[in-house]
Length: 477
Image (cartoon, rainbow, N blue to C red; front, side, top):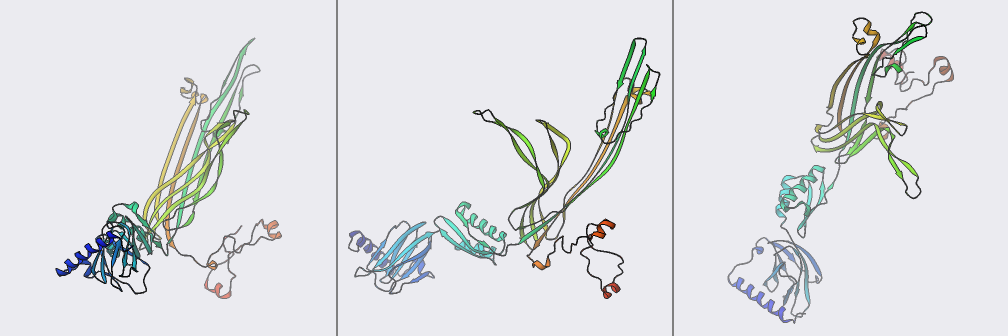
């Protein structure tokens, strides 16, 4: 191998070049504070040497070098400074091998050279931007590999963005940073809603019959209610006027309803910083979405799709540091409603009444934010009747019906995030802690389903300190 003519010619040219540099009294730039590799006499194998573009490394050999072989001179250049010192300079990104041989043809050392980008500038930028993070930077061809440890996901993301800017292509940056002590965020959402409904309806239905001899005239007036309240309550007052063949019947239909609906939901959920989490307390109902038929057998079957309803929560927290949290949250409260329901294949499909809020906010730990506050009022008034007759000043009330609907809704959604830590099991309590079933005499005579539970046993000192009288605790039925 060492007797090849072209290798000897290369060595001769390198030796002449080194002699010229020595005669001029100058040395390569790598000789001043350059990276040094000391090769021991027992090192005859291969050694990995990372090198940046335009950077050099100094090789000190244990024996005089006779031959030198560079596998790819376009990636790295080797210069022999003296019989036992050589310089290797990175020229382009890539990998190559450099071998040194002595006068007897024995291999002194073999170097696996990996020429990558100059990463010292990136290391300095990361050290300045993230002084408390332990981030290592290694080159891999045209790319960069980040490794090490970071305390928060924000530090890892910052390091990745800095490396992407210096490399000019984020796809060449591999983020292998491990985030330790990742914070966990508990989100408490309070959904409070109050609905007030007032419905008033009044109408008169007339039915009459007049006749003389064999001639008879019959009429019937039915005033409809548009708010469908007549099915809930209806008052009929039926006076009858006239003789055997002449009579008039009037039915008074009146209904008044006032109702209040209060909705309170407080879902809580915990997720690791940077991860998404979802929650649903409710159910699903079937909806007929189509029909599938088999042409071979001619049989058909209905295709069912399930729709969710209830209290839902979906959020993604990111702890920014200093107790501040970037929060992307979506909360939804939905319920089944008979309004605007439809009939499909003989089945009644209800509608879903939904209140939804979706936003991204930045908030401190423990701080509360009103995501959605809405006050809505809807008033509806409708009069139905017989044209012409319903316009009469006094008697027109007999030929018309009146509907009045007033609906008021107030909705408030409050979001409160907390940076939390795990606690011991003994510090947590369940809703059924201390629950005790009522005895048979209490159930039969007093109508109780359970005893008072959650109340500590009173002591003499406790009674003196507090002025509580009577039973107290969490639940009293």
